[in-house]
Image (tube, rainbow, N blue to C red; front, side):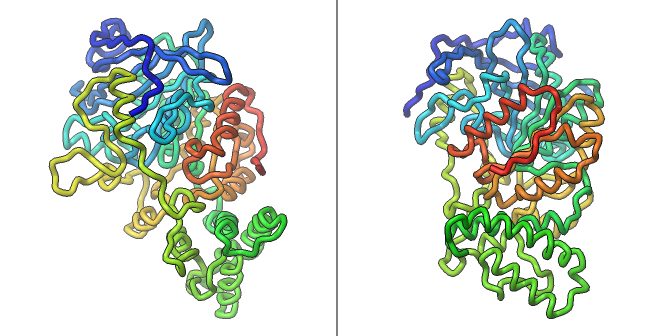
Length: 487
């Protein structure tokens, strides 16, 4: 195992009397503090890493969960922005954004290297593992039943942030929340909740999870605007004719057809004649590179799951759910390297297993993951909604949390990012949403699309531009609108 991040000085802090005076006595379990430096563009940036767990009490004061976090902070005379970061799942730990995207170190093969695109030079960072992930644990089975739910997760995350800030009273800079995938729901809803409690949030970053603002975008528009991504993917895999300038022309033609022809047909699909159904099916098939017989004449539609299975189905291949450019899924992160970093380089000593989205360290013959046990209790849904979520069409129960957060924070800004090859969140649907936002809040949004799949920050080609855009957005407190990227 190669670790390029051994600290120059390790301070394991088992007694935290100083922190306890600023938070409930039992809230911080223990903290390991280490000193490090990262070289960015030839310049050395010194920082302190803090790994620990904060206990969340229930209404009686009894522990209900211990939440693990890793915080990176840079000494400064002026207050620095403070950014809380998590992934999604639900039931995923923070490793994707922590050690593949925004943290000061990045996994490259079987090594940890300085991350030249870390956001640490622009903001202090706190990576949080939700209950049941990483080293975070619920205190009981009863607590799990609450924490493994959409609303319970939101409440616990808001509580974690308040306790962390109370224990670190010196962190006075503007606060940002960053979430990827389902974590974008968490960022938006937690910002709304904290605002209702009087805690100011400066901004939220919603990565590859859409933008939950309620039903201001007709469903047929959102469905139709999956077509440009599918057309681009079909071109990528040789299912559409390649010619000079094909990429731009394919995207433009697919977007125009989706809005002008397809969305109106989907809006009245029940009333379409047989001839109209056949025509739309053939046009859809030719636009996205599928055989015409693969298009269901009843719905005149293709689900994301069907597209991934059928585009290269004749070759027995299925597209990756997270990045449709790929056939094979992304390799798992090296567990030994991760364990060595957290336990040795950061000095966090524990006998706990570091849980991933797929596995739990359970004695059950067939452990059930947090994701499989999740309760989507933020809105009504049917068995069909849950099946659609499992097929990659997004979780059920989204609410207008972003608009609530904007109402609760007068200066809050929203950064929305998506990848063009993501099978979950269409870039072009976000672009259309930007034109439908209420006039009194539209200037507080920034929308960006990237040449990536679902995990934008983990994509070596997309990450530099993505982080550069984030740095610029953090530095721009004016709320000035930025037009959707056409890059």
